[in-house]
Image 1 (cartoon, rainbow, N blue to C red):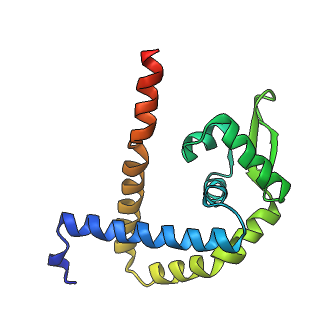
Image 2: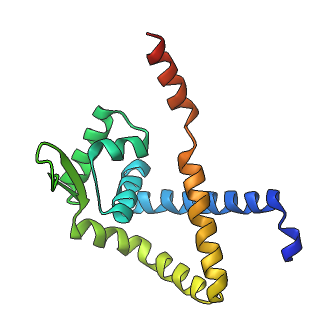
Length: 160
């Protein structure tokens, strides 16, 4: 495609194609790691943010308290994560990847990460900055959208 072929709709389609390719890759990796896609997504969030409270992770995964507890129990049992006291509020917990959990995830994701880094390194520096800002801004836009199921549950709760 030429640059002039990337109108806003085509850029949105390209973003969707990337989203689908990443989703497929995550399903394959979850299967190879013998975990659910939600468990892999939890590891991905922890890899990016280092430490999250169980509540923050539950919100990101759109899970309820009981479901996130069960998910964290499974990940702890397999040695992928650890729960520890919050550094400034010992009444709260934070969840972190263990070294073994990070190593196992990178065993499966490392080749793709290296390929992406090499691919991006070939872009001119100015293009890398533009692409990086675009991806960050798009991720923020998508993450900020309220999920319809969550909104309807919230309205039902508010009505009672």
